[in-house]
Image (cartoon, rainbow, N blue to C red; front, side, top):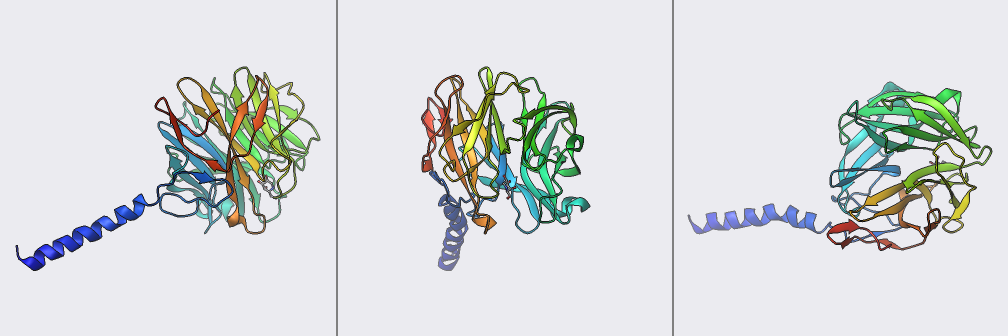
Length: 330
Ligand code: DGJ
């Protein structure tokens, strides 16, 4: 091998290794609350009003994208800090009903019987919020495009801000704001999770709540909601109940008067071998420049069976205890 061939090989080896080094630099050590966060390729994460699902070692984050005709995007992470973009799940092209649509607050659960991932979301047509419908889409793979099924008003009710909850026995529920957001409705889903089966309850009739996020801990269900002030943040409140259909407690303040400048979207249970911690995820909306909207990840603390607390912390840091990943100290 002559000298110039060796030089050429050295140059090629150096050049090929460059992108790997660039990738390495993107490893994040923390999420700074309220700052734009980027995925492992350095692109801003667009997953607003999102939901989370743990599959194997990965946490999946799916949420509103809104860029270039994309409605819902999917990311995954093992540490909740470094998020890898995995694909767009729903776009303007997915169905003709989506040509002028706006999709908000997508959430996904998995149905063991049908082996399908089922997405529920808030469907609007055009820019005002008068359509107020729920919509459903399904897929065999959480990372692959979903098949859009339909939009509708459950039992004729308006349906705006919403969330899904799958209980330990496999029963799934859909919460959504109805009657111009004055009532928070609770529905049981059909066994395939693709429709509403029963209208179960109207929580705090006239209470004017949105942004529902539900978690179960011990004997109690906890539901966090916000007030209705458009894109501006307000005081979150929570309530608890031993039965998902109620009676629910009164609404109790959570966090400060702007919920640390955020609006609830999800509660992630971090299940360890010895205990479970809970992470509140909220959107810090920028109503004027939607893509400047950011995220807030905060520990959700239980100081008694029914006492829920949300404290401000500027950063989300990974922490490994006894070989298990936690994101904060409880
Ligand atoms: C608050 C809702 O929670 C958001 O999802 C969005 O619908 C805005 N209102 C629109 O003003």
